[in-house]
Image (tube, rainbow, N blue to C red; front, side, top):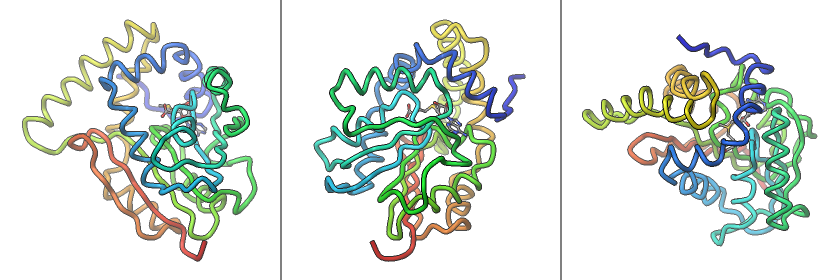
Length: 241
Ligand SMILES: C[S@@+](CC[C@H](N)C(=O)[O-])C[C@H]1O[C@@H](n2cnc3c(N)ncnc32)[C@H](O)[C@@H]1O
């Protein structure tokens, strides 16, 4: 049985070890859908080119880059925060290669103690990060703290399809095939077994939406993407922009 401990040093170490193969495996194992999921999350923020946006658990900065390059409505600036140094290092290379260093900034830090001031951001986003956080409720408090009144939050996280038949087939893929391919390519013993195990442990979509409401967010909306393989949570901080 793979450990699902969310102890920060363990999680950061695990992502640091798989960092070099992380993007390749993301695109391969999701058959390219990960790009669409991130694009959808950014669209939900309804950006107009004037917003400062937080990308928590930014990893190699794919979501941060999407937010300043999409044709659908961009952020003015993005600050990506993550505690895995190697993920950030590769993210920074990507940002510099794309000529985006003036608009995307990376900071090392923990989602339960975001090293940035109150009311700093017009919007915040997290893609496939929150399930790894030791205390997601504390993280929700931190998102509420760094967002301005009226600021929007978009969270992407894996789920499990609920449609019979599809549910069984996806479970087989996610729990049997994906860990094998992940291990083969990443050379990491259990990172890709931890993935389905941590998704299984994550609160249901209804429970996570309630967690956001309980920690100060309003108008919480849950959107099922790709038959429930991924859920997108969209919420707003009460108050006027
Ligand atoms: C699955 S990756 C997602 C990366 C990126 N958001 C993406 O869409 O590809 C999860 C990232 O969350 C980071 N992470 C997990 N828990 C964290 C925490 N408590 N504080 C900061 N970063 C965290 C990991 O280091 C890792 O880079």
